[in-house]
Amino acid sequence: MTLDTRIEKICDRRTGEELAIVIGTETRPPGISFVTDDDSVHQLGLLSWPKGHVIEAHVHNPLERTIDSTQEVLFIRSGSVRVDLYGNDQTYQTSRVLMAGDVIFLASGGHGFEILEDADIVEVKQGPYLGEGEKTRFVPSDNPNTRFSND
Image (cartoon, rainbow, N blue to C red; front, side):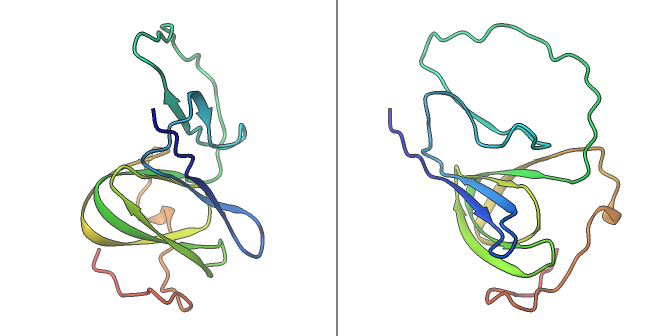
């Protein structure tokens, strides 16, 4: 089994706040490995087990949780996209190109995307969704990749 450990944690250059985690398509640590901290409002783990391994049947007990942010996980099923990452103050931080099979965990700050090749993407985030009032759209002034969107 190939073990590519391309797990990249991307932080705001000024504040050090974690903005995103990119997991390369070939990343397969053995067993179960969580890439998020225990106090993250999303728990993102990688599971890689050999044939015949058994995970015991279980249910998750009811537990009331309080969250104060929305985090997203995107799985690039096909194609490629560029993600532009911004700090909470909307300042451009960096960009990454994501390919089929890559996963990105968007922990904080802002983000935008340009589809580089026709893409199919799976998105997971907390609900319920309360509509456009959940987000603030902005036009980045300091991103060298900025183009106007048509979403």
